[in-house]
Length: 319
Image (tube, rainbow, N blue to C red):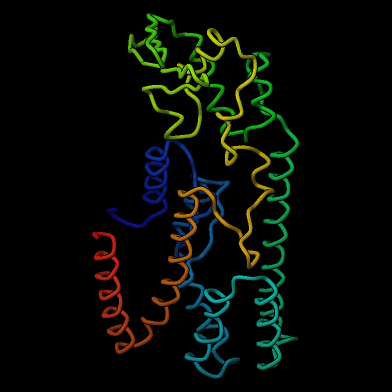
């Protein structure tokens, strides 16, 4: 940017929203720039603005250094509450131990910090409960009172139901161009009236299972309008067969989990499992980066080991 004035930041965030289809982030982390903070509240009023961890630690160095008797001790003590504790009971126990060790139970600054933390946490929990209740109790709005849509609305999550409903409505604009019957399959050619594109829906005679050349179900787990047309107009089905309802897209799936022998949750879906691995690795390497950057010696060791690990991973993935 040309400068870092309020007007420049307003332009920056408005341009950002344009690029993101007007969808503002839930939370944004920045430094303490007053002009930036003012622009965020103006352009994205519903976005939570928080300081990044680096700025939080810098504030701690300035304001509580004398309480911990050294900058190094401030860093070692407070960084643990940012990076090391995953569970609430561990965090609370460590926090209480710190207050006792440094005689901070009656310190107003730490009291206010923890009271703010509790308010934010309780607010977050309440919003999660609201979403959970809406998810389990409310049925998505159905555009037409058609049995297949009504039943799908009871099963699918709101977002997935809306995708399914869009496909259902699009099927009304399709027509069946031809039918080819061979020994094992029946192939239907479905044409989109708006685009004139043709799609092939294959129906297995042995079990009436459907597959479409559009491959939406294989990629996203939502049945496409071409297959829905065959279900309704050829097979005369009034409800979506269970084999086309993936459990991970249902409202009940959030309250169910598969456990291993140690009582840990097992991620059944491969994409969800990969996401969980990614988040866990991010957490691990964030801690390593934070500690590795404390001195030149630890930095060099971290970089060396990271390069070694990267070579091992690349070799494993290439074999």
